Structures are given as structure tokens and as C-alpha cells.
Length: 295
Length: 252
Image (tube, rainbow over all chains, first blue to last red; front, side, top):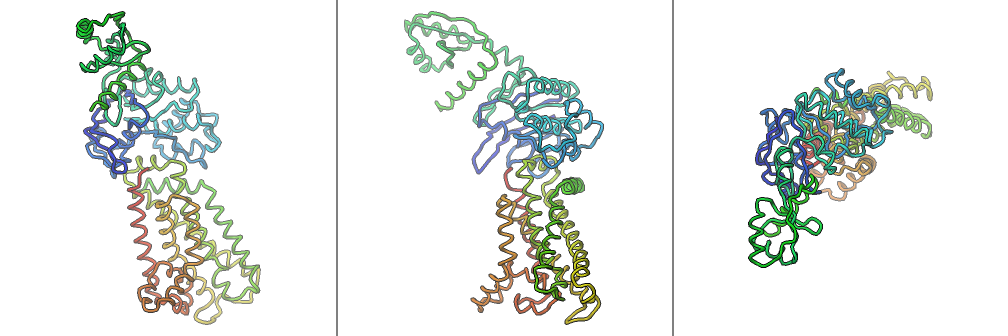
């Protein structure tokens, strides 16, 4: 569906996206996550041909360039803010882009917008505008939908509804690329994880695999934690902090025990831990930051 | 392009600004009719100042029509949904040109009504006076305004893409219309040796509004009729080309 190969995006001559490659397949819901300024929105804009870039982007094997968007005819997007004309009603905003009236009316009903769709959108609340923005993205049975923070301003009922609709569209074959700061929400829908930091993808895998790996961690406590940390740094053992503990990859547990033993540091606790999704993301970002810092 | 045109027309006809533009024209022409010491042949031939008023209205409407895309953050959706960015720019330009033509026709229609109300049959449309008959003078002044409108819409589009602040574009536009001709004449008289070059400056192009009907304006513009028409059109093409290039390349 969407193929992104070795893209580099420049803004004011600064490289924001660095050699990023990934794919989004039909029916998959890819969560694009990362800290503020990591490049999530820039990647989305690049896919939509809105920035200068090098590399290759294709949708259904048709190439997207900065000035040729023919490949994007069946792509819907909501980037940063809902793109709405306040002097038009909700329905008129939809009509502007709709190619199929039945599909448009169906989206309106599905998103439960019937009550206000014929009023001028300048009077809409933030949540109503957000729903309209999502409705615009879902018009014309898109093959690919790109949503940047889709749950912004939505109440709990609307959030559950959008989640349901995303899954429903994905089941019908649409592919989704979604970014969100609310990881818990994203976790409930996504099938794949793309973790980005400093313009680079550091994780690209199915959510099941990500969760499996995230459980393969140990919590470690010793009698002398400062010396332990120093020792691990000297021996390039990747660790992260979680409360009073150090988190180490399970596969390194034997090596760690030997190291502590040889340096006469007494082990207090070494226990397998299942990190939750957020903790795993934070842990990976910390590791990446430390590696970048060391370089 | 066809889709972009359809979208731009749809947006434009759902806005209030075209209506406000027409209302403003009525008010300003009425103001010109009642504030002048006496309605004379010249003010009728100039459509009660319609040319000048429409030019001002068009700067405001044209810059607003582009600026709204940045203000409402709809520019990104427009860009990615359009096969090429130039199609959007030219679709907007065509909508504005058509609106400009409609405003000119409306201005002529109002002139006929205002003349009938204010002076009745005192000046006859077919009566020869000076260089032309009255209706021909009105038509030539309207044609002159149309040529200048192409120029001024191109300027408004270029400026709004460049600075993205609607109020600033309207302000600059007003300065061009009201002070451009005086400033241009001042520079030409101050630097007579460079007159042959300075007469081609863009501020001088405003004289086309009157020069078509009244050849005596040539002594202000220092350009012959074919020269000033060509100058306006060439500047319009240059500004449109630069505006389009900027529109496509600016980050959204």
C-alpha cells in the first residue's frame, strides 16, 4: 500500500527526517509514536508531498513527489488541525471533497454528526471540528488514511466511536498511519508500531512482537546502585531506570550476574518484569538518547 | 484543474465577501454621486468612480480569498488533494477575474441607474462630446479598469503569498492605487534623465484606467496607449508567474 524508502526531509536546510524507510500494508493500523519534535508530523506531511524530500514514496506503486499528487487520490488525512471552512456548514465542507454522496451521508451517520451537520462550522466545538476533520479524511473510501492526533478534543464516547470506525475501515482494507500522544488509545487499535525519535525510526514491528519483547526485561536491584550503574556504563550494558530499579534486557541477565559477582556487588533482586506499553516506549527512547549522547 | 475550479467557485459563492463587495460598491458610488458638487459628464463617464472603487474592493477580496486558506489551515488539504499546486493558484485567479468582470458589469449598471436618478436626461448616452460619445467613454473606462484589475489581482495574489497578512496586503494595495500614480509622476519629474526607464515602473500602470477614454492622460503616464496596455499585461504575467512559484514552494 504505502512504501517509504530512504526518505530524508529538509526544513530550512536542516535534515529533520533521516533515512527513514517503512511500509504500511492494506488493513493495518500503524501507530507512529515518539516524543515531541521527533518528526512524526513531518513524516506525515512528507508522505502527502507537502515538504521537500529525497528518497522514494509510493502509494499502490504510484510515486508521490512534491509536485505530483496523483498517487494521493485515494488518500485521506487529518494533519495538525481539521481543515474546515468556517463559512460552510459541515455538510458543505464534506461536499467540497466528496465524490460519492451516499458514502458521505454514511460517514455523517456513522460519526453521529447528523444533529449539527447542516449548521455553519464556525460555531462547532473543538470535538465537533475534530470529527468533521476525520470525516473529511474518511471520504471516498480511502486506501490510506493518515491521522495526526485524531483523538484531540474528543470526549470519551467520540473516542470509542472513532476507534471502532478505524477498526471497521481497516477490516475493509484501508490502511492507517496514526500518530498520538495518548499511547493507551493508540495501543487499543494499532497492529504495528513505528517508534521514531530524532528523525529516525528505532522500532518498526507488529504490536504483538513489540509486546513480547517488552516483557523480556528484568528489574535489578543491588546494594550499591551507583557503582552498578557505572559498571554497566563501562561495559556498555544497555539499561534504563524505573523507580529504584535498573531495567536490563533478559538476554543479558547471565552476563550481568557474572559482572556483579566479579566486582563483589551484592545482588538484592533480579526479577522478570512485564513493562507496560508506555514504559517500554519510554525505556527505548531513553536507550536511544543515551546512545546518541555517547556518540 | 477542473476540480480545483469547481471547488474554488463553490467556496466563493458560499462566502459573504462577494456580496459585501457589491454592497460596498453601491455605497461608494452613491457617495461619489452625492458628494460631488454637481454630477457632470466626466463623473458619469468614470462610472461615479467605479473603476477606482472596484480596484480597491478587488484587492481586499482577492487577498482574502487566498489568505483564508492559511488562516483556516485548509491549505494542506488543498495541496495534497490537488494533483498539482498551480491548479489551485490558477483556479483562484480565474474566480477572481470572473468576479472582477461581474463587478465591472454591475458598476456600469449602477452608473446607468445613478445617472437616471441624479440628472435624468441631462447628459445623453449617445451625445458626442470631446473625444467620444458618453457610453463609449464609460465602456472605455471600464475596459481600462478591467486591464488594471488583471494587474492588481496579480499583485494582490503575489503579496498575500509572500506576506500572508491580509491587512498588510490591503494596506499596500491602497497605497499603490491612491499614491502610486503621484509617486510615479514625482519620481519621473525628479529624475527626467531616467524618464525612459522610470515610466515603465509598475506604479505608473494605474493610468490605464483613464487613458483608454482620455488620451490626455498620456502626458502623466509618458506611455502610449499600446505601451501602457502591454505594460499592464506583461507585469500581470510576471507577477502571476512569481506568485505561482512562491505559492508552490512555500512551506505549509
